[in-house]
Length: 161
Image (cartoon, rainbow, N blue to C red; front, side, top):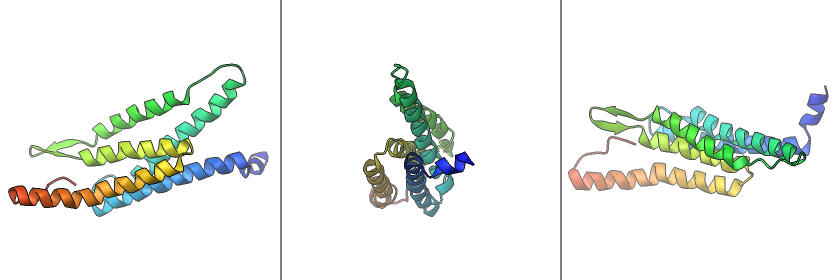
């Protein structure tokens, strides 16, 4: 019962906010990917973003516990390993099909969703929000610009979105 009593503490509300914001920002990016008919959608993006935030939250809490013992851990080491791990995840999405590279934008989007989760985990909500907006612009606005330029250049549509 004590678990449920402490669940509503200020510290836990901060954790809840961070996890929810990371989930929300990641899901928004994933929804755009659904409209673009890409395989990684809102669940994947939300999981990558929220997972990244969770790892940062854990590293900050553990760092504070170790600081009281005189040990100075670095939560940025966790962030750097998240970036590497999600990069590895992204390599599984990138494929060649009929001599065409596919999935690169989705992999880059997942990598960025991890960055948004890291920012949210550190409480940098404005940076996470702006990165989400900019990523949506990249996914949608730049797609139409790229599509128009390729159509003008060679008369054919761009195969990857």
